[in-house]
Image (cartoon, rainbow, N blue to C red; front, top):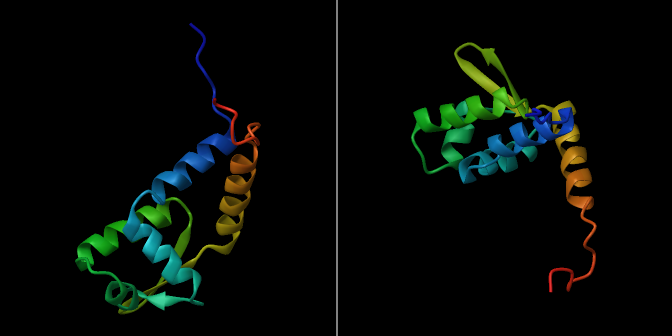
Length: 108
C-alpha cells in the first residue's frame, strides 16, 4: 500500500491550526496582536484562567512558532512572531481561497 505524503504547506497549516484550536490561545493571540510586546503577567490578567494554564497555552503557541518570548529576569516578555504570523496568514488565505465551489447550491 502506498503511503500518502502531505505537502509542507499542509503540515504547516495543520500545526498552526492545532495551536490555534483553543479559545484561550485565540484570546492570547488577539491580545498580543494588539501589542508591541507584553509580559506574562499582562497576559494572565486578560484571561480568566490559572497562571499554569496560561503558561501551557503560551508554550503551545511558541512551539507552533506563532509567538516568541524573551526572558528579562525576572519576567518573560512575549510578542507575535511576525514572520510566522505572515506565513500563517498566507497559508490560511490560500487554503480557504482554494474552494472550487463558489455557488451556494453546489451541494444540492
